[in-house]
Image 1 (spheres, rainbow, N blue to C red):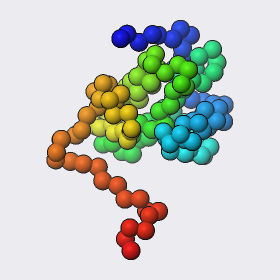
Image 2 (spheres, rainbow, N blue to C red):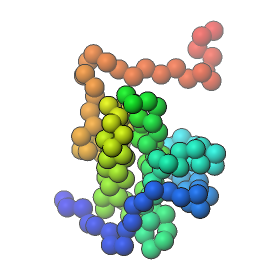
Image 3 (cartoon, rainbow, N blue to C red):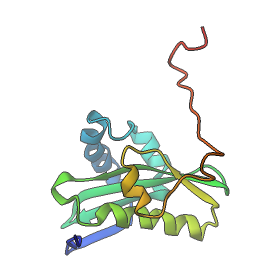
Length: 145
């Protein structure tokens, strides 16, 4: 099945004027448990690596590449409006992040997702399968007793 392209779609770096709109845009995705909450301050801090997809001036998608070091960056807050999903916008947003990581000579990009197949289709995979795993500890749970 070929993806339908969206005419008049622009993917660009987010600008300060986009911050309130981005925050409002991702709120429904936060409520649905698809992405973690972002404060206005976080969005502002990530502005140099935050991208928006706009269609006729309306935000229909966003993503950020959070750069931790020259070794590692993470794709975060990938959201695409349900009314335009399935048309390649998410793919283009991810590719924009990958290009930025390559320009900055970042060794590896990670993503934490519930859409594993989407990212695998874009070339993401497990690093050293069966040898290296990402482990997490939620510091808000009283696991340590």
